[in-house]
Image (cartoon, rainbow, N blue to C red):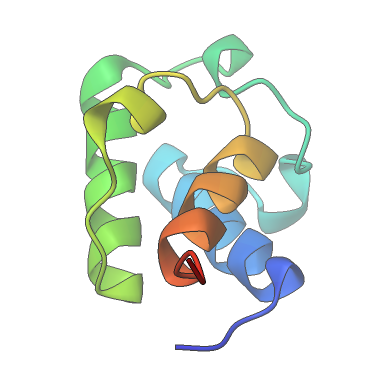
Length: 86
């Protein structure tokens, strides 16, 4: 699957704002998700699950637990979608 970083950010932003019931333009890529009211661990896990289903991937727990923003999530997704050439 070939997608750009911008496409990943757009999908992740859509999923995050949808799960949290926020306006689409209320979350920037650098927004710390932990600072958003209502973004508890259950909702974050639901977001990650939806992202995994959307891209048909499985994210590693250690990668997921280190994220704090849409940009961070997009980087982790891109890492999985772009196989290491070695």
